[in-house]
Amino acid sequence: MDKRIIYRRLGIGFVAFVLIIGFTSCSRLKEAKVQMKRDHIIVDKLQNAEDYYDMHPAFEKAFAFLRQDGLVDLPADRYEIDGDRLFCMISKGPGRSRSEAKLEAHRKYVDIQYVIAGTDEMGFRPTADCKLIDTSYDPDKDIEFFRDQPDSWTPVLAGSFVIFFPQDAHAPLVSSGEIHKAVLKIAVE
Image (cartoon, rainbow, N blue to C red):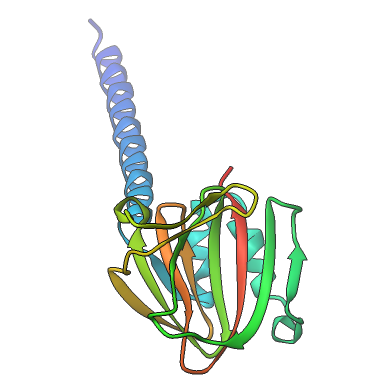
């Protein structure tokens, strides 16, 4: 066989090998990111939001809403961004104690909870580990409550957000002061 043909075949084989390894590595990274969503909650500053765009097709639009000028001046209300697929609820009010906070979980929506002012200490426990149902799942409100205690508590400061997926039961609005926050609801798809 001609040496040029052998080299070409080796070259094509090498390129195919590199592409396969590259795609496999990429899919492993995506699998790891999905797994990350299951193992712990995501807490970060709004300035790092771009790092999470690839986790859901609507995250870029959701974070753009949080970055708008005048967010702090919006009155407490529901704001439609993309109908029922993406909306935001702004709230402002006193926090509650850890003992008053109940773990909640959703099935249809991912929450991005952004603290505008104050500190929101949020409890977390994997939904699969919640065994003590307080209020059964209401599909119209997309919420269920549990009597289980959170595994951990995380103080979320102003300018920071938390992402809760359906597998993340959470107990928000814990504070000794007032909390001003935006909760984005993103349809799971």
